[in-house]
Length: 148
Ligand code: HEC
Image (cartoon, rainbow, N blue to C red; front, side):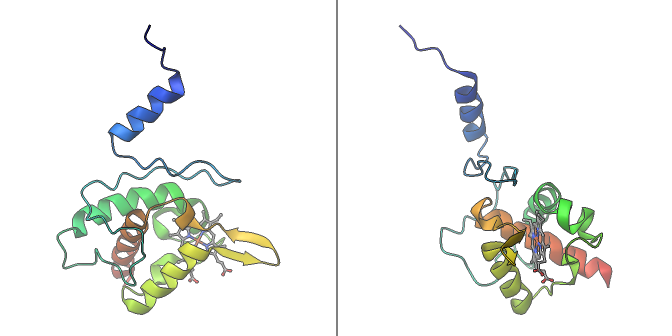
């Protein structure tokens, strides 16, 4: 007799079918949103040192598209809509679109920010893939250029 599928099992297989990352299960007070990174060159487990999607790059347009939506869903509530800080957290448009900016970005998304035992920023790399996070950096690079 066929086993009846439960609703969560169905939802999960639907998610997997569309290629949305399922590693983003809720943890603490963070409710990360799945990011569909389809179309971006996969980067593997090991973190690269600098934004692999920065232009000129075939992945650039797609990265901005993915990054814009991923940013607004996962970072905007603290860092501000469209990366314009409302004062709660630093304005990420100020990050340089170069090696130094990438290095600091990578450090923060992997380590988060903890002060006096209080979590100011969660370790976003625990919830989002490297591809999703570099796509967000690509979007921030564009916002940086638009600010000048
Ligand atoms: C819960 C709120 C919160 C969320 C969500 C959050 N951040 Fe942050 N972030 C902060 C705070 C607060 C700081 C400042 C920490 C400090 O200076 O100690 C920060 C700092 C940073 C910095 C360093 C900026 C600088 O100028 O020093 C980067 C880069 C960063 N966040 C990226 C991100 C990205 C990318 C996301 C989404 C994937 C994100 N953050 C989500 C609160 C948040």
